[in-house]
Length: 190
Image (cartoon, rainbow, N blue to C red; front, top):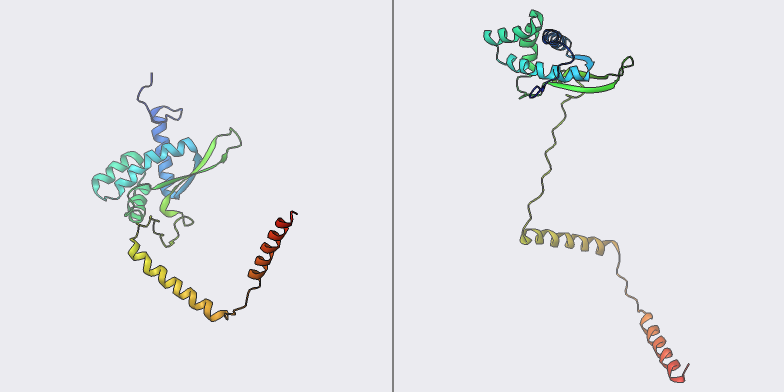
């Protein structure tokens, strides 16, 4: 039974899996983006993100700890110098997984895994929008002066643009005549 064994074993023995993840992590640190299967990318993210967090603290102990996982001096140097300075203010989430189409040979799901701060398409400096919040209900006293000012401005525009023409409306007399005609027809019995 495999109770409590949650991580993906990737169909490999422990030594093979550790060596593969170490090599993939070094490739990711060197190239900033690699293409692999989705399952390996998810396993690599769990493997490499704690190492990147360790690289923020540049001490001999943290270097030795990371070296015990990666075992490549060039990768350690790159991680502690270039990458650590770039991700210094990021609290976590150093990698991004982008799903791709399936591989032709075995139809395996493919994905890119990349370091977040090194993709220029996603990290352009755009002005941050403020989060929309619901406005608190205003008191009637605060709203009333604004409404009155708007009405006054509207009236001024209407008065200036259209001249006022007063005409006698013959409609009123016609309606009385019509009502008189209908009463006369009722009296006659029509």
